[in-house]
Image (tube, rainbow, N blue to C red; front, side, top):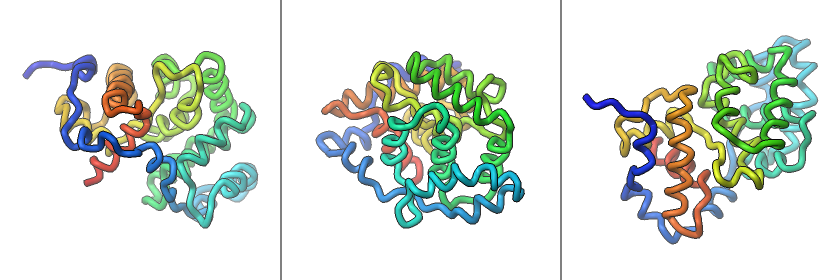
Length: 241
């Protein structure tokens, strides 16, 4: 069997099911989605009383970003442009709340491990500042891995890339290469077109780099041009089918 690196994604043609969306207002659809339902009490149950008391002001802020128990992608992207590094952990919590939604407690428990890390506020502030100062790069992606200096306990790539996306996508100087969410559902859709793409991509930089570049190219090919996070959105919904 031939071996592949992420580089072969650079010439991968757009799948027919995605090309069928040419001419549609996909960004408008993404920006106006109804959001993800979440439960504040379920999060409280993941922490001790003292841990929850320390985190409560941040969860209260995230709750204020929600409407009727739903938190929207666009709201988090907008808040990311308004906060400073002192609120980076709050934005991370918002990304985790959005990512976990109403799924099983296992995901919530894994996220809680990271929030219990005493260095979490500093790590998220440093990530935020690195993105604001230099824009997104694959080197920053390396730093959020489990062995990276900005990685959090319990946080795999599916959730770490959510924080990376919400903190870094909207930066003006990150237009050439923008961070995107890469979870197992997105990977499943990519594998349909690119069978060599890993089922569990993890923190492998070559695959992540090729994926974000591919999303940029496919977005340009769809027209307007289409934002690369719209490509991620299409991959996610296709992967869920």
